[in-house]
Image (cartoon, rainbow, N blue to C red):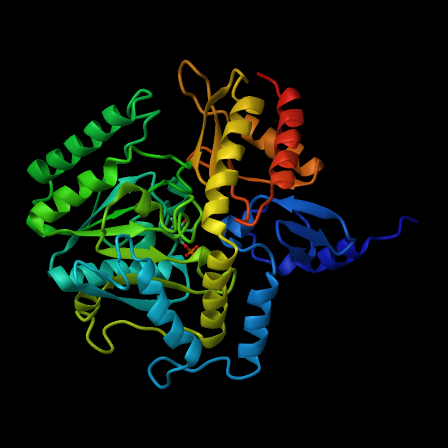
Length: 440
Ligand code: PLP
């Protein structure tokens, strides 16, 4: 009789796990370190998923783990309505300094503040509620292909895949969508043409469906995440800013996936020189503890009068300690610069090892947010079968990758920002081997 492995024994308990979780692997993880995870049998995998862009400081960074342990030994939950705690106060002082364009913690003399919650979707809800209460306007303009989370409000703003909305209607109303300036599919390969089409669609929206003085906010990802790792023209956010300024619309940037050094600048918005009104954060903020938040001018945050928004766990003490340690690690280990450097190597390397495959339409990305899109080069018909084959081949070779894009046709690479030259080279060798086995 075949003896069961430890993993198989543990997996016998999986039947109660809600099948709603899309499963990429059946690995049972025991520990992680840096860019690596290790199963309970001791098999090591290079984790280029980072838990979907969360573990920017690497798995179980010792400084983050120590900060969590130390805080947990003192106080775990000190509710925001009732108490202050040291890691929370430190985080509220430090994070506003990262607001795009800030000098110290101020932009144009206006000081920034922070509201903390638990998940990306929850922070999205906060951002839209704030824009609405501040402007007393009812509508939001979001972008096709965007993903902002799975609560009812966040779903209503999401259009990266019909599965996030289908059979859940009615969703909250008051959302209008315009096309994201996707250079490949909207601009025929030209970022400028795509941007022109998007800006024309906004004009048309204003003329046909929604007058600008009804619009509270633009909600936008600086680089599309779940929608396919699509990098728009650098002129996109400045162009949106100009329209927002003209009509007193709030500009909300969703930096949930792009933030905390991921794209080679602290926030992806930084690379465009744009000053938004609200920055939405989660994922990389606390190296894996559930924490999220929004940054905005203090005068704007003050539009939320006490009790109009909140939550039991927002600003949890242990999560804040993890976030403070995360900022320390990002700074001390110069992870933003490493993301830029390794990202360039990864992008150039993937172009070399995969770019010539006849069904690769684009290798793209910024910093350590990099992707290969598979589609027919002539018709742009998506090829999710090839993306799946790449993920499966990589998995056999112990490299973890996940997909994105509406049709699952994009393989994304989201390494921890601590990833090294050797790890990037190993990932590239693996992809080279896998692509060599791919059908056309
Ligand atoms: N916004 C973006 C850009 C995201 O990528 C995600 C999650 O993938 C969210 C919002 C939602 O975050 P959460 O899953 O923490 O609710």
